[in-house]
Image (cartoon, rainbow over all chains, first blue to last red; front, side, top):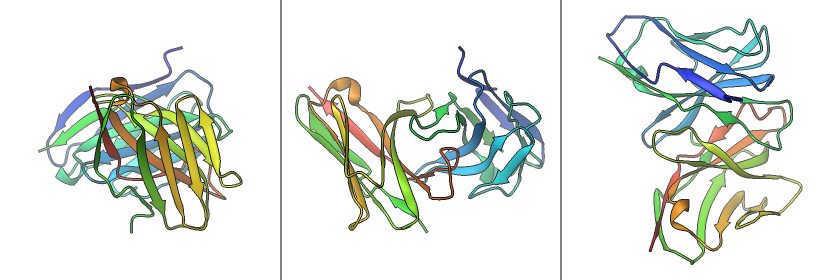
Amino acid sequence: NAGVTQTPKFQVLKTGQSMTLQCAQDMNHEYMSWYRQDPGMGLRLIHYSVGAGITDQGEVPNGYNVSRSTTEDFPLRLLSAAPSQTSVYFCASSDSGRVGGQFFGPGTRLTVL
Amino acid sequence: DQQVKQNSPSLSVQEGRISILNCDYTNSMFDYFLWYKKYPAEGPTFLISISSIKDKNEDGRFTVFLNKSAKHLSLHIVPSQPGDSAVYFCAASGFTGTASKLTFGTGTRLQVTL
């Protein structure tokens, strides 16, 4: 199993550009989430999904879109990048239980100039 | 408003000694708590969890204690090893939430010295 994979690992954007961060998991997990990590702020939930076709907002959803057309994939779209979106982005997945916590991908480091 | 707080940004402990990492929360609806460990340039990895119906959970060298009345939990690592040097995040989820919707603390950087 590859677990949770994220692409790209690094990305530099100019203000106003759009892009999609890719996330895929091969564990057949129902639950998937996107977090961003900023210095001194821990990880903050952007969007999450409890199954294919179902998504909801987290703590900091503005400027981001998600969709979940398959169990495996959960892409995060930046509609018009802003310098405030410079961050490290982590995708995570888990099954319906809570015992084992979430499995995180290796992260995407995004810089918006 | 930080609902999960880790007030110590860093901690240094000698190898073989006990490491104690602390976490406080404010939301009474949280009923499940987790600790994650994170190495640089990697994603967090799950370490240990505890349900609000328990006050202690142990897994090898790692023990998590929960004090609901004080809204406080702690992670004990005994004995500490150099490989434990990492950032540790406390996380919580609520009654209506799932493992997909966690609220994280800001992290504590643990350094285990020789």
